[in-house]
Image (cartoon, rainbow, N blue to C red; front, side):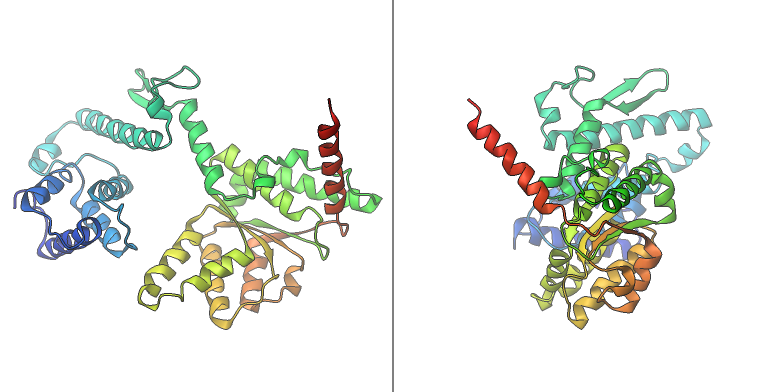
Length: 380
């Protein structure tokens, strides 16, 4: 079949397996026609064959869904291609490519990269309704989210694209609704009634502010924060969520907030279907391993079985070894955590322990909120 000459025998086996899997996922038992196969293979031609095979292997190993069609695969191929350098690959004239001058080669590469970035961003914006509106909310770009710079002969993101990325990351973060708009600088230290509590709260707030300011350095060190107090309702979750919000808005990083209870339930759910255990387990571990910042709320509140504890350890260990930032909240100091010592030892390495005031302010905040509601109800 035309277009397959650049692949080795082993790679051709991968391609055949891919078409078999694609047929099952998108066409049930119906086979893919040769005409359709040719069309799909044609769409790969501008990408490095190594990127194609790598992407097909990823696709084959993924948990199946009906949305994983050939366009979905092409997105994986593009990402793999960019990881390999993103340079346009011409299968028919490799020797000609080698003879081109450096300036010609660079110009062609830039053009291809611009086209690729433009298509990727347009697709992302289309899905999130910015491109569909055909109008930039700031009146800057043409609705694609990209602005062309003639001098640099390249594109850069419009403010509308940055805004959309920020909003999507905030949505992905799963930060509880009540904390979604919270800012670190607005953490109220005066709400604590005791002098020592207020002083402690000021210290904690300053740590959080400086952590956000110096996040690049903290991330390079793989250092997170461990907010703890024996009492509940002291403001730990509120400040942890605020730090997450600030990192998304300032650095456009991927953040995920999850309670320990929900995390352990996610782990337990991998045992429900033994036939897909390996895939589900791998997906879960990779999901939590690769997130830039993981916020684990209320660690130590749930007792886990030996198996669940082992999987939780794997998540923590993977994040530690890959220097991924993890922020914890707990009602225990790290030394007192009722978890496997391997886990607490790694948390000690991963996060700086910050003691919160031993004074609950939840009831005070609830009272203030109720008073505000009464004012609204009685306001004529």
